[in-house]
Length: 324
Image 1 (cartoon, rainbow, N blue to C red):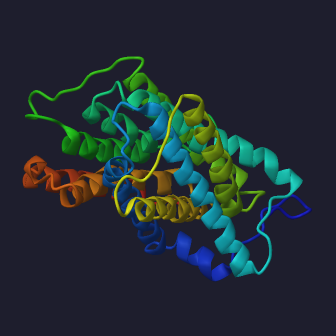
Image 2 (image 1 turned 180 degrees about the vertical axis):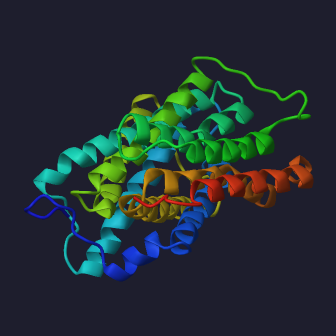
């Protein structure tokens, strides 16, 4: 939480050294991406366990809102227990929490679910992956948090090429893409909200506890999504065994991954951390193959090439001088 002097309380020196080290930052970022990658197949499984149709956008929003509300509760209860005291925001934290909730949870997922019902899966995956590129551009050009260099642009292009490769349907000579304002346009707005939230976390963490912001914005954003889903006539109820257990795991994904990601952004430049976001669709593709049995979609050569491109992009961005 923010100190009276208005400066961000320093993390433990050991934890900060780990999150900024040449091996600690990649390890923590990869763990976040692995958790987020598992969310892709878990969402599909969750819809089946709760009986939510692919076209029932209101129920999908209610499902997402419930997940994020639980994620916020998890973060707050865990930190409260660890600190042996309530992990509550001060008056100065309320504004930043609301601002972050608007972009990171409510706006990002509102636009995502509105667009997903009318967008092609391949195009949505590629547009969603551009969040990492947009975060670096916004951090450099809009928020003035770092300089935009040719190395960063080249690294992002390599990572983005890997995402395009693994999501391309059919042959590489004739990829299948489409764009409509109500479909892919909404996905693009969702991606923009995600990119803005990365820059906001980096800036707001200078004066506020990043984990506190993460936990409480989840609660506020989740409540907003739930209210929107209920207003649209959405309903959720377990129809198969394991539904509540899966929902708890998905809440854990958000609670753990976003909290760690927020800590990473609070002590590293946006470009150094955001480029790891290109690993999300790669992990998602791999885990979907295993958990959903989509083995017929796997092209080993293409998958290896995509992973190589994403890895090359990460190396290029972080090769020299990436720390703030």
